[in-house]
Image 1 (cartoon, rainbow, N blue to C red):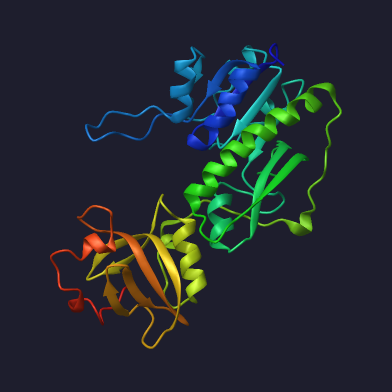
Image 2: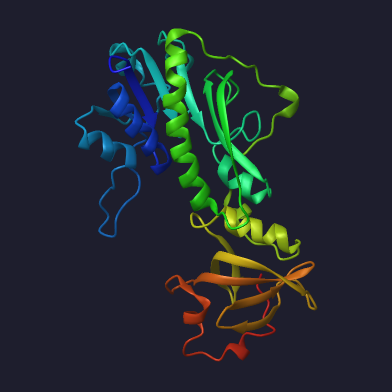
Length: 311
């Protein structure tokens, strides 16, 4: 596959293992990334993870603001195949239909389940027991193309967004390299997605990041781990935003209004939910640094917080 001319389209760290494998196994002639948008503390733009890797390997980088209007530069390179992974924009049909081997996507769910931009978040928030990677042909509708190959992994009880993100990024890279030869020689599968099984994992809205302690303890726990560590689930303590990055389900039955702090000790903040207490262990209060609760309570009287309600 060393002579396979690949244009790769991807932006975040999730895309990096895929791009690394392609650089090692194929001829990557261009990397297309979203524009640099994140800034450091000095206000300087940070290179996207895929841009950084492309520059390290002396590969041309292209960062159009709107790919639907600025794709001719990619066609002019005459790629054999376009491979996308968490790129972040809708690919125009003209580009999808150009390469002789098609436009292939590495998607972080077991399609047709969880189409959309945040499938990993939603899999954990939903309490799913498994997730996986789908290698698929792209078409004009979001994540609706024919499935080529899939591989699943379990979601363990202690998994968070960070751990599943890491596992799936490497799984996707390996599965893609395993699958590419069959795409090139035409022996690959093309499995139509069953429309009756379609679900969606759209990008998380700000209001969906807020913890609702009126829910049962498992739902609250799944939200926290499904958003950890970016962007982080949150609630409010004394009108200050409290981000929560790690929690534990307890077997202690709730005995107060949901959201009420029942106890605080060095192991965590015990909060009432609909059914059982949940223990918050890794937090960040607005204006302070992220820390474990054992450090948070240094210099304060924990009893002063008992009875307060997280909203």
